[in-house]
Length: 96
Image 1 (cartoon, rainbow, N blue to C red):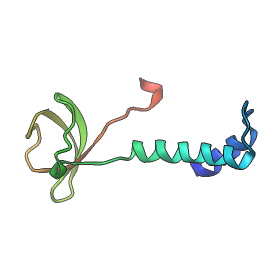
Image 2 (cartoon, rainbow, N blue to C red):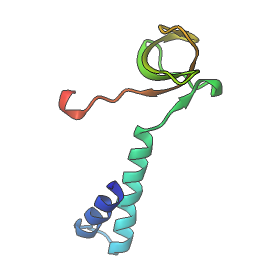
Image 3 (cartoon, helix red, strand yellow):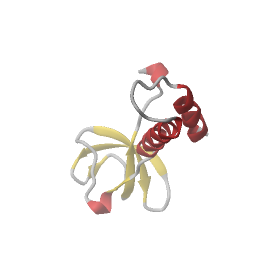
Image 4 (cartoon, helix red, strand yellow):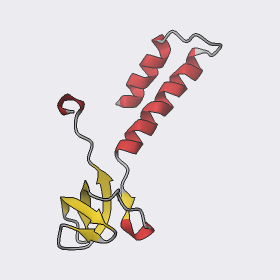
């Protein structure tokens, strides 16, 4: 859905440079895809990708359970079990 909206934005944006509508549509679409993918990015602990110390994250446990876990420091989590992957918790803009 966001690709279609991005293409529409690219068509009607007042570009103050020498690019055509096709290029503008592609730029908006690429930006929308990048933002969407970044927001849904999972980090894998096996790759050594750990969150910053003293952070709460959405954690995927070995076995498939998903929960909010507090990461204190290297290999110290508040949940019993093995964390397989994690992602940042980004609250909706209305409550920030």
